[in-house]
Image 1 (cartoon, rainbow, N blue to C red):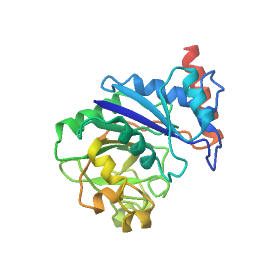
Image 2: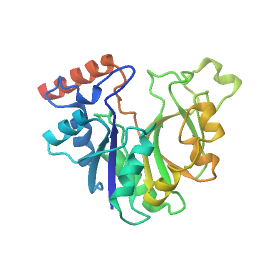
Image 3: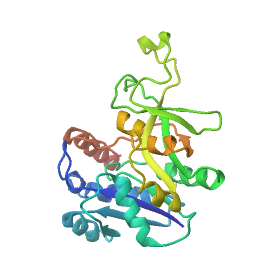
Length: 250
């Protein structure tokens, strides 16, 4: 079984209520949901939220939604609560797809599932892509990942990695990889991971995925062609609306 869970909160520092933004005629969370269920290998999609307004919105388009605890501090804890209630086998694959990714490529989700099914030694997987020309690898908001020769993560950082003196000018010649915050976990591993205390490196970098590496577990990295534009601010949403309208007119 491959289940995608979309954690969605109403509160957002930069864009409160963004899950319910509806300038396209559909809720933002509906756009995400429809992209996810278009993935060939996803058997089921569930929105996980702690807000009744989001519950009502998801039900309005016949989506599946579960009300979760309001005490969770991160999306991983929220999806683990849902996964725990689903039952299933230890090797079921649980996808964590952010609720502000309305243009996530369904094929990328299939690639994550394929990778976990092919690499039995990896309990988790994530996405990365080459740095787009419009992004600056020195930006600490753009998380970098470096991989070993098997395509598994060695480290994630907000700093410029890999680094060399020649990279100071950021000429575009280095093979920097931008981490994309979409994850796949084996169900048993996800439930264990959600019980661990934050690790030292995680606290330093403010990157939850470092908890996995610091505890000695592997994370496979699937490198895709390009990033999908997430929605962090009202300005991001306006750009998404413009792209959506342009596609509708085409």
